[in-house]
Length: 441
Ligand code: S3P
Image (tube, rainbow, N blue to C red; front, side, top):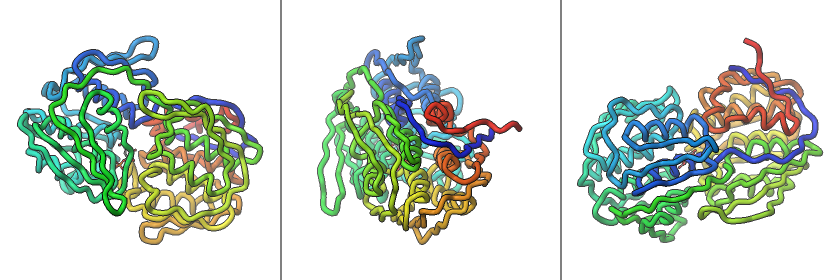
């Protein structure tokens, strides 16, 4: 499906964002690990999360959606999943696949896992290696990629692991496997990544520790074999989804857009810090806490942006937001340098290359130097390009945001991928005054 974004005038309005993708996957999985019934409201009903729900059902977990939008999960307890009869297809969902691998490592049966062409290209060694050391066996395609088979063990061993990447998916997979061991499992991260797993499991009764180490590193520990209490989860709005209307507003003169109920976990808000440094007019009010996460309403007004240098240490707190930040940079006067983006090459697509190619196709001066992305902004982008989303929702949405303020419309091919994380994106944006529509085939 092709969507085309045409230049629009000022944006205005107030919108609620779809549920946080990271927290949605975790709510379903962790509810499955509890003993008893959990209820989830505000769950993201995007394809990624629905893939996790159906994988859990295939492993014998009753997961139901009620007519009022509440999801109800009958937990089977830690170690209580049943062998799936068919391969688990996680679609586009890296979080679903990697976190489930951690759970499956602790179950004494063999399961098969696959995904779409994007997920099948993504590196799994970072998860497979520690899980192997804990005692699980994996048989994977070349480069340790999906499809793969995992044979877990009921007598999994605790592990002390130091990860080379600040990845919440790697950390979470190990911690989830650690739940199935009779001792303490620890993971050291080079920089802190999002901590939803730790917060949510601690809230359910697991013993989780966190210790700051030298050089910004952090060590997370979890005690195995807890009995997890069922929960009522309220999933906050996704700050990574809010990023798209936020940037659209920031680059549109006269725009005033209010984004309601957005998660403000400090390990997720690097984009907002960066936009403020660029001179964006961003205000947060109505701060409150829901289910262990701070949330608030964010108001973004259009303003003149200037280029900045984004330090590599900020990457974990805005790793999914660089594509749309690069769009903001195209509209900012001067040079924006985004450093340390190696991880962007192994997301749903190689985002570093695709952003550079797409921005250049839209008439923006852009360079990749090593793992750094450099954008020379300030001239209105010509637009007029046809961009292939490459099964990457954030590439698709970023270029639709750009098209709204370029001189000529931007068309995105393969825009159906937006359904993985942000169902209703086009109508939410058009409700604010954007002009995004389907192109007749
Ligand atoms: C996620 C972690 C990040 C992020 C992804 C969601 C999570 O991936 O890019 O969209 O929910 O744990 P990495 O852990 O690979 O950095």
